[in-house]
Image (cartoon, rainbow, N blue to C red; front, side, top):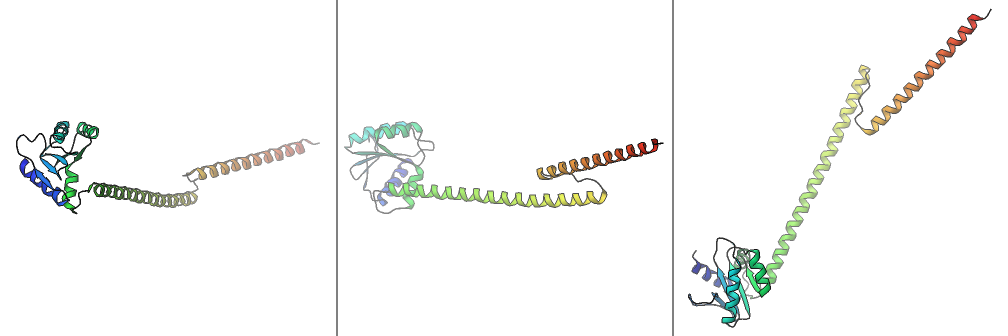
Amino acid sequence: MTGAEFEYYVGQVLHENGHHAAVTRASGDYGVDLVLNGEIAVQVKFYSVAVGPGAVQEVVAGRSMYGCSEAWVVTNSTFTRAASALAQANGVRLIAGQELEWMADNPDQSADHRERYEASLAAAKAAQRAEERAAVAEERAAMKELRKKWAIRTDRRTWKQADAAQNEGIAPQPSSFRQRIAGMHAKREAEATDQARRVRAQQVADLRARFEKRP
């Protein structure tokens, strides 16, 4: 597609959306390629890169030359930040390739399509956010289920180790904080019991020694 063919394409799309598009002369157009409804000056840029602020400056100048109240810049590409800032400062509307494609796919013979386009963008973003939230929720549920399965496997492994250790007479290795606490209590009880046995044995030995020393 050439630049002239793209201008014709833009005119057709705008016409299908309810605008009367008049093409200006090819040379000396003062930066205006189309005039919509006798009120909107349109600069059309067929670029392979982002459109810069120069196009905005041209259409601002052409708006006065054609006695228009509004100015647009339409492109198949995108706009630089500088172009967007300059357009906002001068009340110029920028229509990038994505919006132009939407207009071509959604003709309704209405000159006021901006609100519908913004609503479609908002709906698309809302749908994307909903999909992202659903994906996050699904991932969290999967991780929760995985942790649950892992905990069950760990408990089963712990019980098997405990059974094997009991059969072999070896104390099982604790695998959780609760088991470590229980092991500490059991160890303390065993030490207390062993100490009590030693005390009683010493008492018996002392009594036996005293009895043997008696005349």
